[in-house]
Amino acid sequence: MTSPYDIAEIFPDDAARLPRRQSGNSPQSLTVTLLADYTLRGRAWLPSAAIVALLAEAGVSQAGARTTISRLARRGVLEGSRQGRNSAYRLTTAACLNLAAGGRFIASAAADEEPWDQRWTLIAFSLPQDEVARRRELRSMLRWFGCAPLYDGLWISPHDITHKARAQLTGLAFGTMTVFRARHVDLGATTGRNPLDAWDTTAIAGHYEAFIRRWSPLLPGIRSARITGVEAVRARTEVMDTYRRLPILDPGLPLRLLPPGWPRARARDLFTAVYDGLAGPAQDHVRTVARRFTADPLTDVQAHAVSDLLSGLLGSCEATAEP
Figure 1 (cartoon, rainbow, N blue to C red):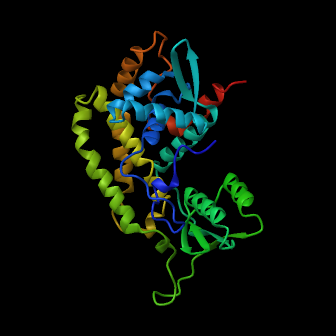
Figure 2 (spheres, helix red, strand yellow; figure 1 turned 30 degrees about the horizontal axis):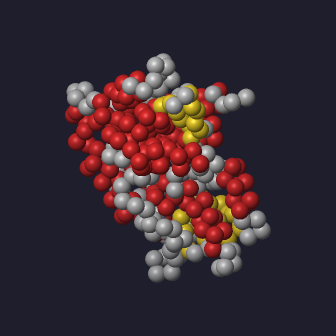
Figure 3 (cartoon, helix red, strand yellow; figure 1 turned 180 degrees about the vertical axis):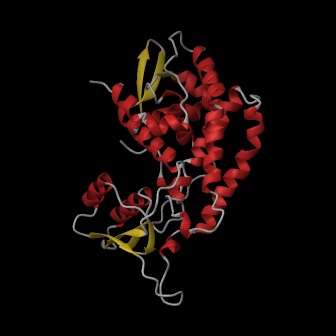
């Protein structure tokens, strides 16, 4: 199954020359986030007309919404069911597992930082220049793993890579890659390049600050329960669709290496306050819209909290998988 998300959305100007993302959140991205936010726990079915109606509230045309649903079905993200003239869709098992793992990654990025052993993972590779597609795929994969290019053929991460990542890298770059875990030796500013220079920390801090400016004004309305209905769903979808990019831009860079007052914790706490604070009213609205198109019970349409993502919705996906 193709990933519901595109690394080009996060790194449009990467050295791999990935295509530039369109401005704003794409209809496919909004649809996946919307379904994940309210149907992931039980892989609930939603009438296609309800999905179209919910997307219309986010500014997506009827035609655009139906095209988006069809494309996601072709990509293996959604599966459909039809009863007479009525159709419904839900996340496929593969998409559910993918999104639950992604949700856990996002939630774990919002957890407190673990101690750093001051070692870096170095991934050196050499692929022929004419293997453009393979080089692009490898660089995209490394980005997802939280790595960044210190030099053209040397990518680094402050964390060890998982067994799953090792297997994926082996399959893609068999016989062309070497991985090390090592400490940095400082050769001085005039000779050596600091490993942290692989990331544009000024730009990353700017993304955090923009997120904080955008979402802080909502907190009084959330605390007083003034944000409900369409506004609650729209805000909750957008805050997730925006925040999920930040842990890729900043893959847990060690705080000891970053400027004082690094805004990661502020953004994390704000995201949790908005996402969790709007869960109840947003869930109520999604159920209200869905009831216009079905008489089926909608108890499986449930909003989850950040803590639920961290504790494991993977089990829910596995429990609802077809035998």
